[in-house]
Image (cartoon, rainbow, N blue to C red; front, side, top):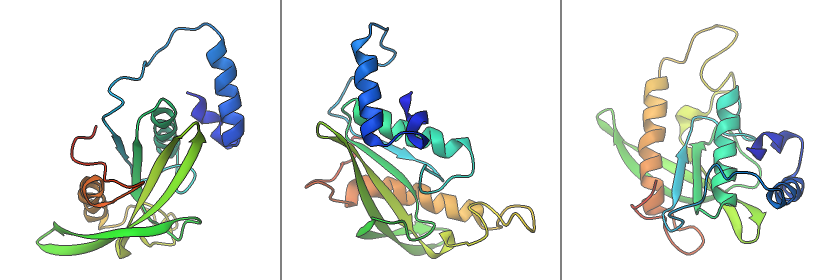
Length: 177
């Protein structure tokens, strides 16, 4: 995956590197298939917006790689803070833990050239706004007591996103991978 170079290269640099590598003869590990089926990636962190370790890098790499290969791609993650360049695009009410919770969706589209890009969708809920850390307070140690709720909410909200958000003129629909 070239996405690990994300920290070193900008989008133009990645595309140039990819085009040089594609000119070389090398076996294709993943030939894009079923391009009509959108891809939705869900993670508690995604590079460069939220990162504690390798998960954010892997998630960012998946989003980039599926997009660049021609899949319509959505990556969903919590809206931990006010991420620059994001716009609110919708809201939904989801049922969890015996009650209804409203979430807001923020969106940022990243273009990778040749009409390829990824829809980054961030789920906003007050439970994600913690200045200490994504999963817990490093000074006190341990995890937040409501992490099960927080990431269950992310999962349910992410299931709704392809159905309720109209991005680039249409929803992703229910037939997604």
